[in-house]
Image (cartoon, rainbow, N blue to C red; front, side):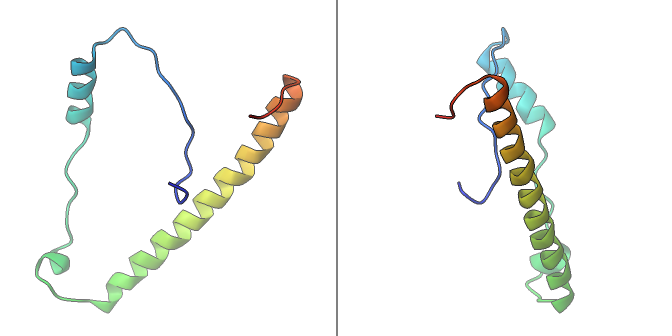
Length: 84
């Protein structure tokens, strides 16, 4: 997905897959819905948090990409490597 910053990381572990899934299930909780959304009412003040989320997304993505480009260039130079 182009909209989310991510890194492709592979973990090697001795823990079996069933135990990994159990640990993930124990650490994830279901999302909580706003009461005005549940009742079907629209409140214009709900747009303020939406704007804050969009701003946070743009800020985070921009900062991530800026640092990611610098790191990739530095590591390619350090290792005398080419980026595939």
